[in-house]
Amino acid sequence: MIDLHCHIDLYDNPDAVLRRANDARIYVLSVTTTPKAWCGTNQMGKDYKRVRTALGLHPQLAHERYGELSLFEKLLPEVQYVGEIGLDKGKHYKQYFEKQQHVFSRIIEMLNECGGKIMSIHSLYATDEVLDVIEKNPKAGPPILG
Image (cartoon, rainbow, N blue to C red):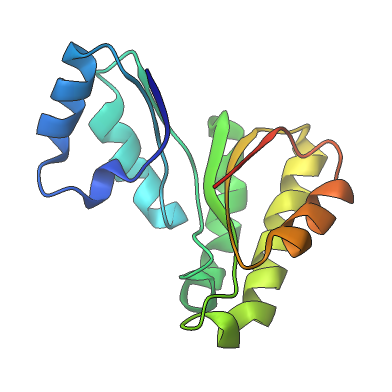
């Protein structure tokens, strides 16, 4: 079994969840919501051979954390996976859509420049816009849409 989108750092007891997944021989892609969260979340999974941690900047936080794009770029060479990234036009986040588009486009451009990573992408009410950005950056890497 494979979980390609798990927010392990948001569980009350992440280590217990990781131990249980390990015992069940489940592969886990642990996605993060901000670049600052990546280091700590990556440390949580480092002792588990079936856990990988993705570098993310969640669209619901993009308007608050866009200043972390430079940290994202700095960490990017260290990762094979990127997520959670994307766009969200849900009723609570539609007002921030322009900022989300800027952040998402910049991340995809970075991925395109570095030759690509496997991506976990959030696309609530914005699938067409997400696909447009990906199509303009063919070397960004394979997307997993959620």
